[in-house]
Image 1: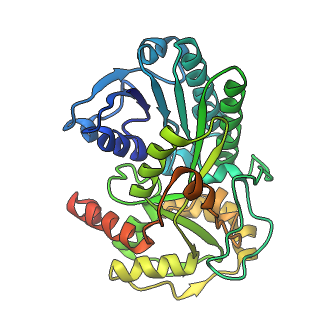
Image 2: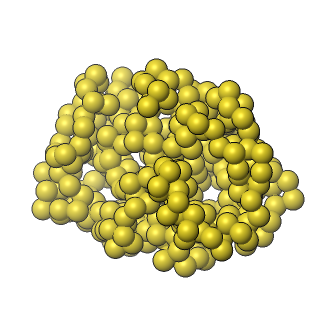
Length: 335
């Protein structure tokens, strides 16, 4: 199969290209003119230069491939500084352009890398860290102005579903917070780098799901082959409270664990000021996430295990250890 990967220089996209090399598939990697290609320099793939926001540049890249894995879109610290309109363009318009090009070029299979953020926010509290709250049936239920990234991902999914209605065979995967080696731009591993460099004295209440990059890659490949058109599949790992997540990370990085948990109401009330302060000192927490303090983003990935044949996810500590080792090896922790 000939597969085009967009966002090929990003965390998930680059790791997918590496995972696909050595299989029977032929890989074409789409990248922007200004993208650094260092993460792809050592693997035998075809490079294709285009911009997902320029629809006239896409047909030549999409033509001749059997499948498209669409990973492109702004994420991480840079994305948190974008205006909402730019976030919408990156994810929604870019995804619309890719689905339309795929329909024009007769692509047989389209896989969209969305995010668990597209499901919205949980409305209840869990009883334990292992209580799953949200499944694929959960629908967007939050003010998009307060969380532009989640809303953009939700709207991008609607573009994919519209294309399914037009005849595109498309599947959606929803990774949670992806942890592991190779996150060059610190899209989701920024808090690990921050803690390893200087520690983090305080935590905020709430919870997140963290998933090993290898489980995300396996989920993509399984969804490409076995996913049902028009369906979404959560790719999730371990549900952890934020204080527990930060404590585990600090222990592994040999830093002091957070000594204080700030009340959720105080974080939400002061989110605008905290956002400005976090940018000044480089905290990896934008205001949009601070406003979600106290919520538990725990997910149930049983649908992916049942329909895609995925095994039990790897633990967070394994993913974090590999992330720390990769950043140390590449000099990030000395900066």
